[in-house]
Image (tube, rainbow, N blue to C red; front, side):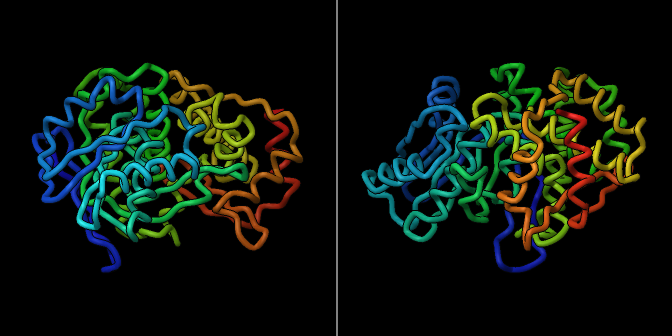
Length: 347
């Protein structure tokens, strides 16, 4: 199956997302595969056999969100210089969202920009992180605060990679699928409520539906000046949770699950979402083995951390909230006492 992105403006080239169609990646010049130690042991040889390049190199880094920083970007860049990659070379991101974000960022700044290709190996990366060109790294102030919008030339989503995925990683990906269904497609959410994604047919359909939603949104709003911000549902809260726990305790999808529940509580308090709908969404998250209750230790500190997020501007916090299941509202005028009332429910 192939899903294409064609951008509304001519600023970036469109590209194709292939689902279970990886036979050969043909590259005219040099190429380097960027991956981590865990993925390299499982899938590096498989990919190397399918890449046809003038010269093929590999850059293997440590596994984990805590290595998603500028120091690791510098290491990747130095390896590329060591291999004498030129401006016609291509990077291949083989891994989850961390690898995809870092490889894309490295590609965007190496000799002012070279091509890169996404080969996502986690469910979260396949349905969300690999599509749309968001690249970057974390720092002490927050998540993905240093980066760029830089589109890949192609994305290859292979379901066979998911067979080696730990159950916890698989569940983390389901959070992003649920996110897109709640925001954009009520019927898709109702379908998810009664599905077991361990069944291949259901999994492939969920992946395809999620990618199609993400592709359509990104095509309309590449740089997140409008509707693309809706894909951040749950993330305003999630990024604070990740920052508070040093990016080590929870997987990104787990933090998003917490964030979805918190956003829903705020939406209920504001009258956008029924309590029964919030319960229904939380139950669906739990059905996919996701945690849904995070304990906030310091409400004031948690609230202040919102202002470090990229989505805050002019001292306002932007919240993406469900307006019923299948619809959304974007709010940047919610009073502090209402937000803190919501946070108290998790303290």
